[in-house]
Length: 252
Image (cartoon, rainbow, N blue to C red; front, side, top):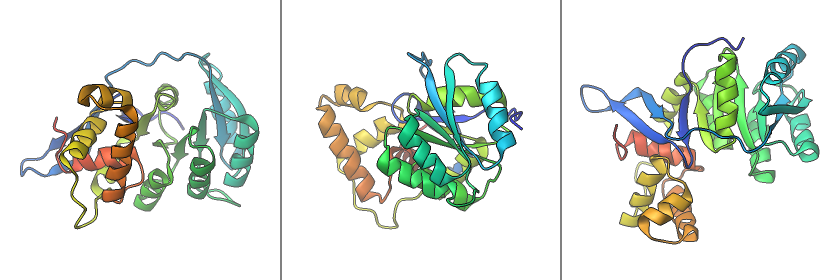
C-alpha cells in the first residue's frame, strides 16, 4: 500500500498548466502530461479527515501522515455518513475518501459534502479503477482520484496540492477522464470571450489571473465559467479543463 512509483497528474483549478499529447493521427492520446507551474507553500497545517471502512488503512494513513508537520489528521470515519457528520464537527480542509463502504458509499458522500461544504476538498483514495467510479467521483466533486498503492510521499504532495485547488489524478484515472469527459453532441456554441476564459482556465489560471489577463472583473469571470459549464453540460472546472484538453484548445 502507498508504494506506487507512477507520478500523479496534476490539473490545477487555478495554478497549473494542462497539456495533452497528440498521437500520430492527430487525435488525443489517452495519457496526458500535466505540469505544475507553482511551488506549494503551506501557510498553515492542513487538517485531514480519513474516511475508510478498514481500520488498518486509517491507522496506516494516520501514522505516515503524522510524519509531515504540514499535515494533521483531525479525525476518522468508517463510512460516508460518518464522514459527513465528522466534517460537520471537525471542519477539515481535506477529506481522504474511500469509495466502497457500507451505509453510504464514497461517491454519494462526496456529492453531499460538496453541496454542504463546497470549500472542503475531497480526494478519492481507493483500490478500484473502474470508469464509472472514476467519472462518478469527479462528477460528484472530488478534486482527486488516487489509488491506495500510491507512494507515501506522492500522497502527501497530492494532499498539499489539493489544498491549493490542484486536481490530483493517478495516471490511469487521468486517461479515463480525458477519454470520457465529453461535451454534448451539439453543445451550445461558446462566445469568443467564453472560449478565451476556457482556454485560460485549462492553462491553470485562477479567476483573478483570468480577470487580469482579459481586463475584466473577477465576478465577470465567474459568470463566464458558470455559462461555460452550463453550455457544455459539465459540472466542474475540472471537467471543463479536461474538455479543453480533449478538443485541443490547449496544446502541449
